Length: 112
Length: 113
Image 1 (cartoon, each protein chain N blue to C red):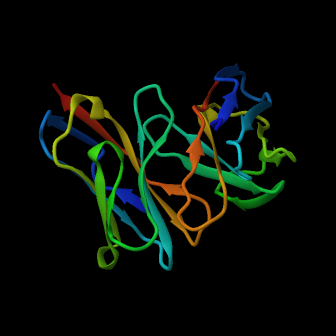
Image 2: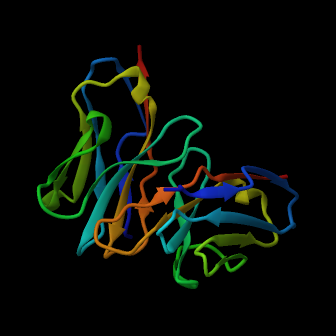
Image 3: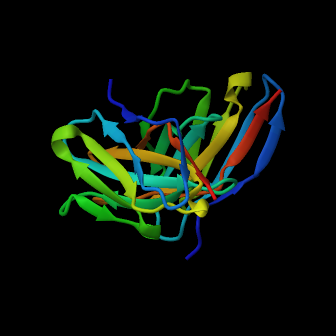
């Protein structure tokens, strides 16, 4: 079945640690890829997106993601996390410009 | 530019009742998508409306229905509410095009008792 998989349900890091959240998808063909963030009590916000070109995408707040087509992956990274990065992170895929499909999310807790 | 607004923010209904949730899309967006987000899960696609027509549907029963109006605002209707319908319902607006992202509203928290 077509799906979006996020490997980690809950990640706990200390401030200044590096972050990598995994995302794999199983859709074929052309896909647009996204990472969204949901801070506690707030709505989903777009962190970054990829649709073509340089597979290393830079987003807001120091986040970046790398699209590896051969691995069907779009992992999210940040070199040094802050307490304010505590949130839920969702990977999403938009296959063939149709509706957006989300992964189950990864909860990130950053300890001060 | 205005964002996506949803109403109401919270709602409590009894099993078997019907509910209507509303969404105003972001200025310039003509597509509205609805998602159900259960606690601890990712948003699940319900359906999408483009120019007042349904433009795709997820794995939800027919008691979930929708409308889109000429001003691109939208409604989600759920009949015969079940306890499992308790969730955060998200509306997102967008415009067709390669690599576009969705703008999400803050959601309506529906509790069915």
